[in-house]
Length: 221
Image (cartoon, rainbow, N blue to C red; front, side, top):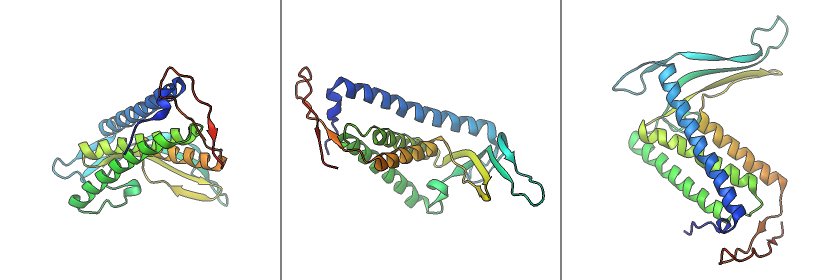
């Protein structure tokens, strides 16, 4: 599989790469720092031999609205708090009950496959699909952020807890982390790009970096 990136042959492509690399590294750094802080500030007890035995306090960040509405009225609120959880599975604890000899290699394989696929897709992505490029980088940074947790600890640290009641729709969202937020932002950016239905533009990159850029050609939608 060829993982060279033709758009790096242009100055504009190099600028895009530098911006995406900064976003990628910053997202992973924020994810790891926030998880470390959650581990140090929210964890009140842990069993040294069994990672599933632990206790956590919570930090009430704040809320909009009031969870206690007057009688006969539907409460309206959005509540955010931090609490420490360990997730041995995928998002929303899926596959957490698989035996370790199956679960660990499975998540490693899925993560590595996803990273290589995203790198390949970034290589062949049309030049003007900026949202897709941003989205793929965010998805990859989130996947690697959670992969680092699994590699070092054997579980992923989650700590963001959101609940709401909006016009009668009450929901207590699954606890998540910065890496999960990055993945969801990436998916949203990718979907928006699809809805925009841009005409893909590909460029004929010169072999000589000093040569002028050939005229871009447009493909049919």
